[in-house]
Length: 166
Image (cartoon, rainbow, N blue to C red; front, side, top):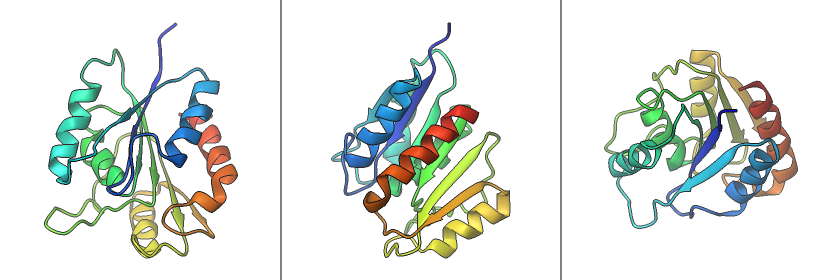
């Protein structure tokens, strides 16, 4: 049986095994997925983070499922096509970063699900809705803020369902 992998990309102010990633990795592990969380600490440039994601995925035997949060979502979308991602799960995706190309027009050739908080003060929910609508991706907007930490049970249920269909 082939091993399936979920690779996580954390946000700029977070770490590789923060609350969200730890909870989602447990969901993935329970479904038989191998998990890896890329450590971007000390790497502020999104392009360098994309290169790091490529390097970390280089030895995987098959196409990974990618999960990115905030700036990690930008990195995920930027790398997904080259990595031939099997599916993509994005949390509060910062697809517009100063000094970098917008990824709002980037279409991915795999299933994509987005989760956004209505009260997010870092990534405006309108940007996420625009991205999802433009490409007809699945979208869940929750009554939460940027961290989505107050809705972890819902987030885990959404991820569990996503993995079951990916």
